[in-house]
Each structure stands twice: as structure tokens, then as C-alpha cells.
Amino acid sequence: MSRVTVNRVLLGLAGLVLLVGALLVLAGGLDLYRVWHLGQPSWWPLHSPHRPVLSEAARTRWRNRLWWWPVVIGGLTVVAALAFAWLLAQLRRSSPTELALETPQRPGLTLRLRRAALIQALEAGAGALPEVARARVRLAGRLPRLQVRAQLLLDPGADVPATVGELEAGPLAQARTVLGGSTELPLDLRLRVSGPPRTRARAPRHPHRPRVI
Amino acid sequence: MTAEPSENRVPRSARGPAAGVVALVVLVASGALLYDVAAVRTGHRAGAWRVRIAHELATRHLDSGWVLAAAGVAAALGCWLLWLAVAPGNRRWLALMRPPGALIDRAGVAALLEARALELTMVADARARVNRDRARVTLFGSADLAGAEAALTAELERIALASPLRLRLRNRPAKHRPPMH
Image (tube, rainbow over all chains, first blue to last red; front, side, top):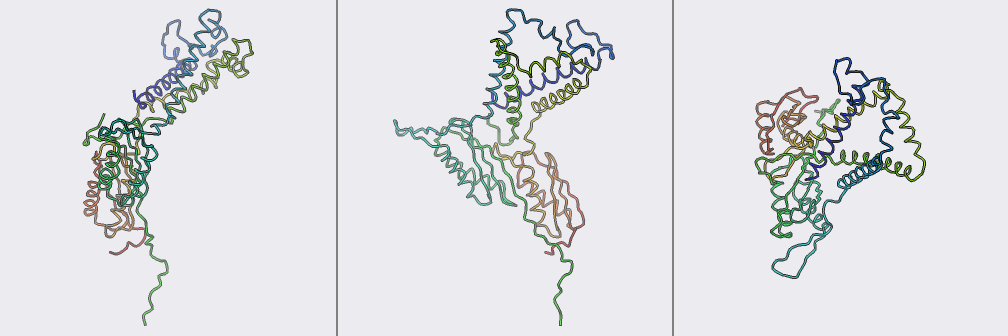
């Protein structure tokens, strides 16, 4: 499962837990079951506004059972470990520092390309294109499915399709050649355009008229 | 997974920052509770914070103002997290038609429209606002609206967005004298 799906499922789960708990407390606290004449089964939690949120008896109900502490400690450990893994997934560096290139015509030779060098070459190539003011490139994923993430800032009034075409034909095509034929090198390109320069064409309040003699 | 060039779409946002914050909160809460439970099981005293929270939960009734306010805040937070989980996000970006994965930001489209409008005759200034299906351009000056519409439609076609924007034009008198071309 991709990071997008995992994040969205877990965020939705956290939201659902919060919402259901809060609605139970609100329904009990505002006495909505009685106001709206809703019956609820006897085990229903938080049903009366005059009950404490978590009474001493409810908190210590299962304390003397043999399974209680192992379940509490095990459950908390699992939750903490999953949260830690989820947090790490957000912070992880997205691609390895070195890429191993295929050399099919020379067996026994392994070429290693530093990620930083590839990024630098792509950034320099993209930044040198006409109408590109700034270029920033990152790489994501591992080699057969390596992805280029580029952010370009274009000059005012730039020709967008032409610039994108030059980026694909120039730096990206070179990178694809370097990485070998098997890598598709999909592109995630984000373009921004700076605004037009605004010349203050304001008429002077007291124009200096040329003196006509 | 590769999208066809004709149906290039803005990808759904990964929600990284929100996921990181929620993961951190869950980690801190469960870690603190685990530490305290383990301390009590090994013969130490429970932390003052846990004693305090257990006492509050056992004495406050459900209709107390604090409990209701906390539940309201939690419900709002829960709704917001559900919204983050469902909504597509990445609203800042519009997809370009041609290479798959190419996006342009809405402010960038607005800047291109403004730059094109400023080239028209009798336009002193132009402001463009672009949302996800419509571009609104306000021209300051006494420009010919039909000509401006044709020029700006051509500019939008040149940018080649995957789903075309509807163009709305309006004219305002110039705040200052327009440059004469």
C-alpha cells in the first residue's frame, strides 16, 4: 500500500475514534437519549449526565483478572510501535544515496551514481533552460521505479508547453540515457510562474510640461 | 499506475504533515502511559499526572462544562481528521495536458493571464484570480472586451490545462491613465 493510502486510512481511523467517543460523551452529557426518547441497551456506555466520565469502579473492574495487565501493556506497546513506524514513514529519506547502474555490455562492471550528482545535473540542466528562473529537483523511490520530482519557477509570460517539452527532451532525456533503458523515470513536475513586472505607469500629479517658446 | 496523457490528474495529497502530527501525538500518549503502567507494575509510584487525570475522570460528571467542551473540541477535531482523510487536497495545483505528472499552480496560471492581458492595448492593469474551474480576470482600462476575451482564451489554450478553465472577464475604469500604444 502506498504512503498516501496508509496515511489517509490511519487519519480517518483516528478521526473516527475521536468523533465517536466525543459524540457518546456529548449524547450522555446533554441527556439526548431521554430528550429524544431513545432507548439503549443496558451495556451502553455514558448514558446518564449524572455519572462520572470514568468511575473508579469502571477503571479497576478487571484489575484482578489474570489477563488484564498483559493485555494493557501489550496493547499499549503495539500502539506505540505502530505510531513510531508511522512517524518514521513520514520522515524517511525517499531514495538511496547511491544508484547502481546496469552495464549490460560490460559484465563485471558496476557503476555507482551518487544521487546528489544526478540531482545536481538535473537541476543545472533545468535551470539553464530559457524562461526558467529557478529549478529544484528531488528523487523519490528506488531504481527501477525512480521518480523525478522537479519544481520550476518560470519567468513571467513563459511558454509552458515549450518549456516542459525542452525539459523532457533535454535534462530528463539525458538522465534516462544515463540510467539505462530499463528505467522509465516518471516525472512529477510542479510549475510556478512569477508575476509580470508592473511598471508604475502612473501619471505624474504635476506634469512637467515642456516649455514652448 | 502510469496515467494516460489525456487524463492527467492532480494526485491526491499524501497528508504527510498531518499524519506526522497525529502519529507523534499517539506515540507520546501511548508511550507515557506505557512507561507509567510499567513503573507501577515494577513497584514504583504512579506519576502525578496519571493520578490527577484518573481523579478528574472519576469525579467530573458528564454534564460538567469542561467535559462537554472537551467533547465538542474532540468532535470538531475528529471531523477535521475525517475530512483530511477523504478530501483530495493539492488544491493549489492544476494538471497540464501533456506530460503525465506535470502540474502548474493556480497562481502561476493567473500570472500568465495577467502578463498576457497587460500586453493588450488600453489595459492599464490586470488582476486574475484562478480557482479550480474558473479564471476571473479584471481589466483596468478601456480595453475592447471581445478582443481581450479572444486573446486570453488563446493564452489558456496555449497553457494547455488538462481540464479547461471557464474564463470570466470584467472591465473596470483605470485607476490611472493607461499607457498609449
